[in-house]
Image 1: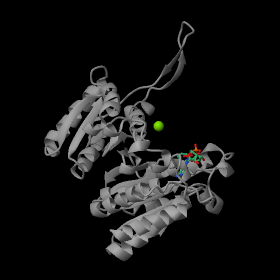
Image 2: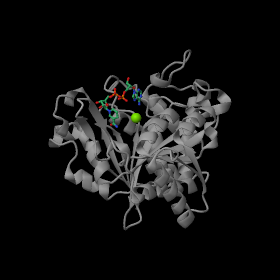
Image 3: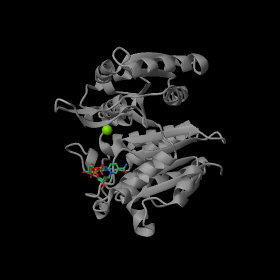
Image 4: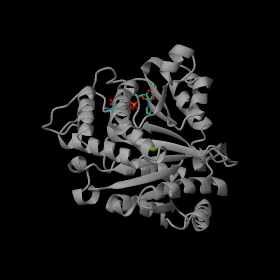
Length: 366
Ligand code: NAI
Ligand code: MG
């Protein structure tokens, strides 16, 4: 097939949760006649053990030449004492950098079966499906000048600089508009143009790009502090939110917790469209390698499976298949199946393998 997927299971529970995705990929091949050209490789501690580096040039090369990368998680106590340059995390950082992934996507979806588990009132989260896009490679985390200096009067001063250029703003806004077209066609751009110059430029450039190329998408603007409030008060008013690195860091964490636990949260990072029309993309769960439960069959595979479903929707243009997977997830949860991390009182915990079998059974019914 021409759908090239590179799977990098990584460390800890990474290979366990990726096993679930593999079974769903087999199911799609068998029952939906949707096949992938799947390659698998090492990253993180697994790559260090085999090759002495957290990711090899050959693996980076594969990542550059596939349609999407699906990554499990990296890291663990075995590699904690290595110098920073050789740690498992460096493999992930290098992939993100070499692929030029500047847009971080964090959805907040409320599955019907988990409405009751939310800390918010059911009417506020039932049916929730929003997407936060955080600019990932610019802004105050990287801006120059930065540093800690001593002033003539002996005081010390810590300095960071919030900077955005037009191209940095336009490319992440383009991702937001593109994605909105595959969803409910609405984008809310979030900054603080009332007090920040970079916010003024952000609003101007998003508005300009919208007029030039995306006027079919509904665009609104909101100040970041108000957005934080609205996310908790009435999150369903949003479809796609696009914002800078700093605001996005906080708003995406807040939005994620409207609905889920760590074991349920998917994510994606996207970059530029290359000559062949592919947008560089890496899909991964938000959680880490969970060494405390690795190898015990306790891992929740849903965050990784939902990351794969995101790749079907946003890279492979298979929205119906993404829907099927999300529906199967909802159905197994509705049946009361829970891995220990999402277990409510009065429910029995199931293993990764039982959860996986139940998912396949649900898919078979559809
Ligand atoms: P973690 O996300 O691995 O685990 C935090 C807690 O949540 C643990 O108690 C774990 O058992 C639980 N948990 C996480 N995912 C789960 C799942 N799918 N099912 C059930 N329970 C789950 O974060 P932690 O403990 O801070 O880091 C552990 C290792 O993972 C470290 O080496 C860290 O550097 C690495 N890490 C890697 C990331 C990545 O690959 N993107 C992200 C975060 C951490
Ligand atoms: Mg954060």
